[in-house]
Image 1 (spheres, helix red, strand yellow):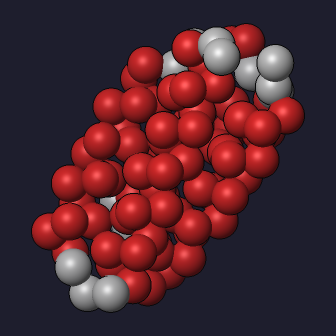
Image 2 (cartoon, helix red, strand yellow):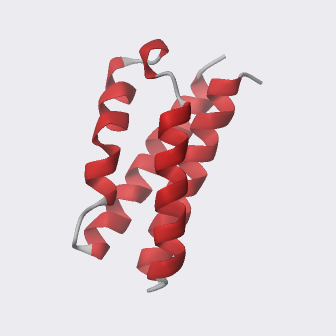
Image 3 (cartoon, helix red, strand yellow):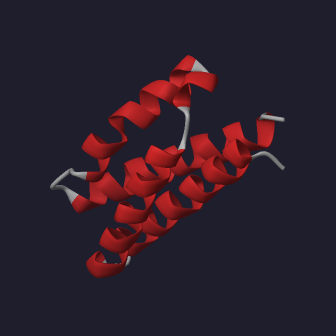
Length: 91
């Protein structure tokens, strides 16, 4: 399994935890995994990825900085699914 695949899969899991945390009202947990997701983003070399994934990665900090926590949870879950599907497709 490649490092890129592991990093994308880990990012997807972190985003899923962000979504579940905010959805269930556990803001502290969600914030911790938001920070983890942003760390994972910096680990990735997005130049090797499809353009739509590059765009999603660029917009990730904006997405995780939203004030509306319900919208943030929905967006994080959507991104989680997109990154998870991409990870399954590569390699």
